[in-house]
Amino acid sequence: MQRRWVPALIALAAALVVAEVGVLVFWPEGGVVRPDDVAASAYFTPEQISRAADFRGPQVWLYLAGMLLELAVLGLLVACPPRLLREQDGRGAVLRRVAGAAAALSLLLTLVGLPLAAVGRQRGIDVGLVTRSWPGWAQDVMLGAAIQAGLMALTALALVGLMRRVPRWWWLPASGVVVAGAAVVLYLTPVVLDPLFNRFTPVQGPVRTEVLTLAERAGVDVGEVYVVDASRRTTAANAYVAGFGPTKRVVVYDNLLERFSADELRLVLAHELAHQRYDDVPRGLLYVLLVAPFGMLAVARLTAASRPERSPAGTGTRRLADARTLPALALSLSLVVPAVTTISNQLSRRVEARADSFALQLTDAPKSFIAFKRRATVRNVSEPDPPGPSRWLFGTHPTPLERIGAAEAWARGVRP
Ligand SMILES: [Zn+2]
Image (cartoon, rainbow, N blue to C red; front, top):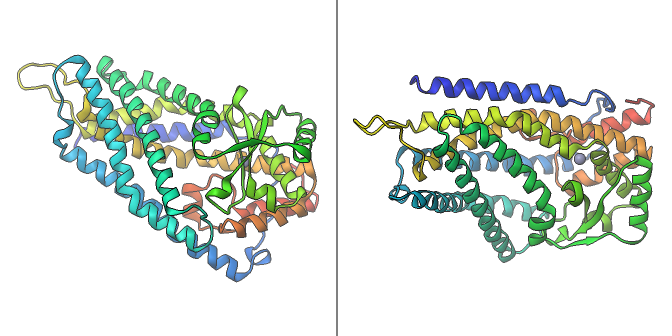
């Protein structure tokens, strides 16, 4: 191995260690019911289990293939940078070129991943999960690609701008940019980005009364409650919290509102209220604040290693970052971000388990909880008990079976 990779790998290892330390620092000790060890066959038919495995297994491989493809494309661009990236003279021109190249790179990656995405989507149609037409999907893809290209251009401008200004220490202010960017995106997503794809209607009538009563009992200022027309794209039933401060809200899928009982809806809402009760969104941002400097240091070292900044012969000056740095930068980000996310998912699973326990406490309806988990798992074609590696790599929530196990434990009197 070449020596220039050593500092990069040390920095990557340090970022992963800090990510793990962050998991321990933010780990919620209490408030989580220890789940009973239950068997999938007690809640799901063999057909339901095998149908989910047949669907989800290859979806995971498609996802991994997409990631590898992206890394391969970026690696290729690092090894043989295309003409397009060659810099022009003049100060302003460099950054203009960076923004344009970043947008082009983002569009290229979307395009390269499109066949795999289409296969995954067709498989979703086959199991009845996808409701959107192909033209509708094409529209979503184009809109998504345009937004992503814009965000990539902005990010590239900020990062390459910093690389040029403070070549040695750019990763430190860059981590500030990352955290501020995450906060802005989190804040604006529900009010700016989401409405581009879906219609959000404030929930009225008995459901609203229900939410407010629950929120009062939970001691939570709920923000607003919206129903989203998710049925335009999927038959899945879900709910989530988004935004923070003035934009914080609970969003419920119309599928959930229309097809599930009042008891089941109450449980879902109670789970989402738990996230607000425990400030899980702002705490997530604090976690990012802790990990970002080390993550960006790893990105900086990896970028430097994959594109050594040799001085032009005889001048003795350091070569500044420009559009040609982008593939190396993108490649480093594509390595560091998923690696850190895998570590931080441990924390996410624990936080989600706590929200479940809170929901059980607030509603004291473990039987409804189990009934809901069974129905939702079958409806969403989810695996009750996914294989260990995919659970560890991608699991942001406890498995459906662990969640059922927690409700069973609650039913027989176990408390956090
Ligand atoms: Zn949750």
